[in-house]
Image 1: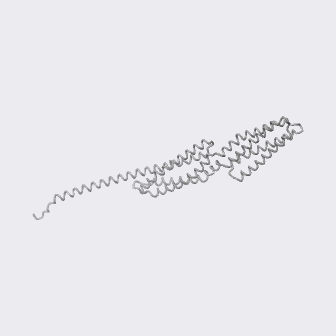
Image 2: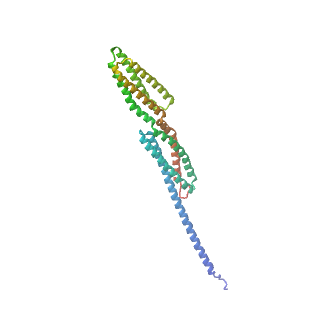
Image 3: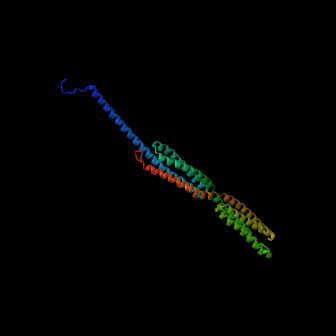
Length: 306
């Protein structure tokens, strides 16, 4: 061997190192590509999570609005239609919840998952309360009572008045003023009952309604007593008019009993009270959780960290 010269490298060693270098490059490219795919996948999932969270708030707001319209509707048809809309939109909210949960778990977003679960609990309570409210709203008992009071009951009361006022001119001269006084008493007592119907329909206090019903009963007794006295004073020719008045009074009192029964159920008043109190608080809590969830997702970057 010539002094000062290094021995030549074996060809096999050089080839092995070249091969190893190629494998390292391939692995590096593969890892880089995989990392790029993971990042892109995470970004897609994050984007989808943000979209669903935004949609959740929109759909929840729509459901709450439809339920409120069901409570405020002035016809049975409108109440039922709005109640159905509220229920269908709530189902959309539930589907969004079921879609968002796995995405948050797959991204390992523990804070966001916690916020979603908070909303899930609140939404379950909200749906139970809203079901009660909607069941009451579609009954519309106060609205039905009001329609009876201002429709058939008003007509019966007017018929009662008209029949009695036709009696007085035919009464004997000596009884004329007494007949007129009894007619006025009978008509005024029926009007007293009518006056009490509206506040009875609007009131939610059981004790107050009971007092009103007691006054109604007293007025009804006075009206019937006036008719009984009139029967002893009017001439035979006026008997058909007196009978018509008695029939109108029976019809009016039957309608009044229906009005009181419907009013006692107080479904419109109760549904409105629940909407303005408990539901308003629950709705605000649900919306707050959804906004916090949106804000948390908005702060997330492609690395999955804040």
